[in-house]
Amino acid sequence: MKGIIVKKPGGPNQLDWAQVPMPEPKEGELLIRVHAAAVNRTDLLTREGKLGYLTHPVLGIEIAGTVAEVNGESSFSKGDRVMGLVNGGGYAEYAVMPADRAMKIPDSLSFEQAAAIPEVFLTAYQTLFWIGKLQEHETVLIHAGASGVGTAAIQLAKQLSHAKVIVTAGSTRKLDICKELGADVLINYKEQSFDEEILKATNGTGVDLILDFVGADYWEKNLASIKTGGRWVLIGILGGSEVKQVDLLSLMSKCIQLTGTLLTPRSDEYKAQLTHDFIKSVDAYFERGEVRPIMDTAFPIEMAAKAHEYMEENRNIGKIILEVYNGAEQFLS
Image 1 (cartoon, rainbow, N blue to C red):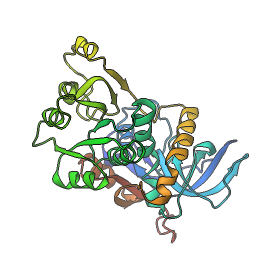
Image 2: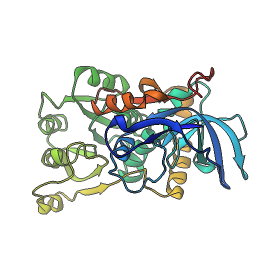
Image 3: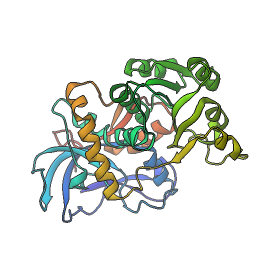
Image 4: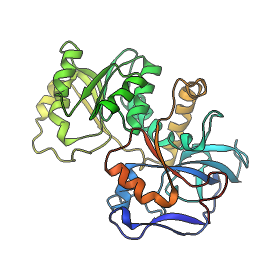
């Protein structure tokens, strides 16, 4: 079979659609014929050689496809349409997935749409509810509102907690999408000082919860934007990983809970538990169309380098998808 490998750490030009060994499912795993995979910033960092916990030779951590083989007892059967997280190997014709991490694809969704769900929705659910403890009618600030996780988090916060959602994004087009998904307060960070706008929108009290994709560049403004006793979840470092000066007393005096997290390096058991809880809480919303994946652009798998460039340029609203198998086998060889 074929998969996308990294010839050597570096830019998108190091990606190659090459012959790789067919994966073999172990006990408790499914072999999936991949129809679509999604691009994540984790993939970009892996391509650059910056992440040490991913050792799979083939990129990709989330897929949608059909079950080709079941090893052991499982609620899934050959031919079932499933989506979920994999431990690498998603950018390929076939991949293995732990059976307890597989999710049934709603009948109303295509494989491309389904591939836009696992990583971003599980991350959004984890950060909002498992870590962020978002409660009914609280106020949440979601940075990068038009990103994959951002668009998922807006919908989950509104539907599950009826929260007041404040978002930041860098263009009117992106903010319009956020509004369509349910965001209440829209802030263009290129034109407005978001901490000042947030204090206006919250009558000077600040937000209960921050989902922070930016990191260092937003440190001071996030600190000004959060209320006393608020929760701050760091899930990205697009604006840098090092803050030159940190006033720990300011965190202490506002009784802030600051938590950093990544989903990909979590244990298989953690991901399985998160997947189970997510499906139990959110599946009905997908079935009713009240929550939906946001897909930006689909590229043929051979154009994975172009897909990575597209993400690096921050052009996407929602998910970037790689089409592996479209029913006519035109991408397989």
